[in-house]
Amino acid sequence: MPLKFRLKGLAETFVENLSCPCCGNDGGDEGDDRFSTELTRVTFDGIIVVVRCEVCANIFVPDGQRLGIINPRALRQAVESDSVQSGEPVFSNLDSVRLDVEKLNALRNNDIH
Image (cartoon, rainbow, N blue to C red; front, top):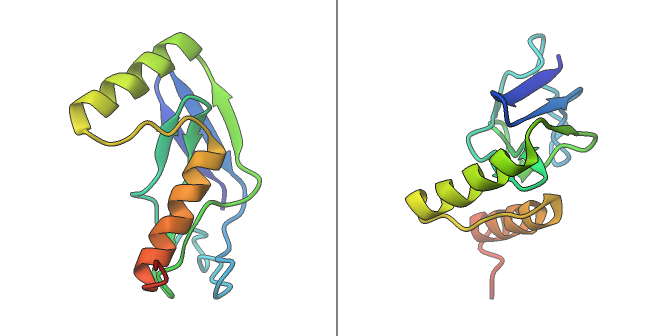
């Protein structure tokens, strides 16, 4: 089941298929069962979907996301404003989000030295 994420007037992202790279969970009949997306990040490149598998707790960025930016200037302002208000760092692109996901998985597995 495809997933669609949208910030009205700013950006949207489509994810065609979800499958956990760690355990193979494909979401069941509904396509998105046993997944959560609360770690999804909004970047200067658009909405980067971050998924946590409810089966094995692996956190991952699904491959093949289709990013769309509707208003680049307003998106940039929204990302910067949200960072100031929330105290969260600005993630500029897909690579910075993937690096953060690697760090989250390492923390979860106690693999940080």
